[in-house]
Image 1: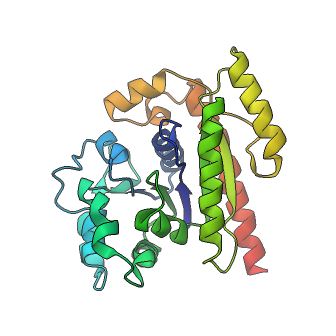
Image 2: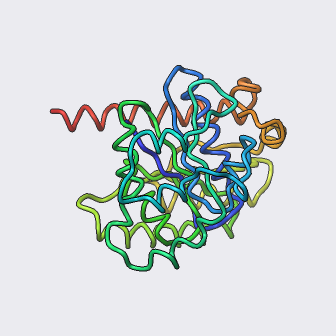
Length: 265
């Protein structure tokens, strides 16, 4: 099982679109893929037609019963999406209360990691849509993942969100045995605008070692896909946005295979 967390502490940067599009490409290639909506806003959950305000079993349920998590209870929470080979553990808006409820209880930062351990024979890839703030949900996501993806809109204000996210990663790394690898993904790139090209150039200069040397272009078809509840790669695989995410997926899966090979040496 390979686990990627997708996070940024600024909204509107293409976080959920990145989760959905990468997962769709993986599922289209026959990989069993699981999505986790760790954001109380529930955008990923809503994308696939579920209501985070009224859902019965959700990630919130897993936290409520963290001490005993039988596999059948986890499977009750799993929902099938509109695409074959792709499932979701949905969000509930009540997840926003978890920090207040759990306080500093020990062990609550590993709830998701333990959940995924029980699903490791069921899914090949897991993608986690993270909340925009540091708290028990973000801590769980980063503790459970193998790599962090940080989508960053190619405009200057988005760079501040990137700085905050990297600061959060620095704090998280203090409690990990090994530093969490991360990849910055430029999104919503419009090469026709000076602001877009200048921002991308600044990212290439300041974050060269951890930057994907490509970009996700602006593509209005993402909006159409969201409205239909079908991921763009499944709806229109030849669209610019879909092909860009396919390139990113290939890079990530190749790097993941190399990392696993190195571990086994």
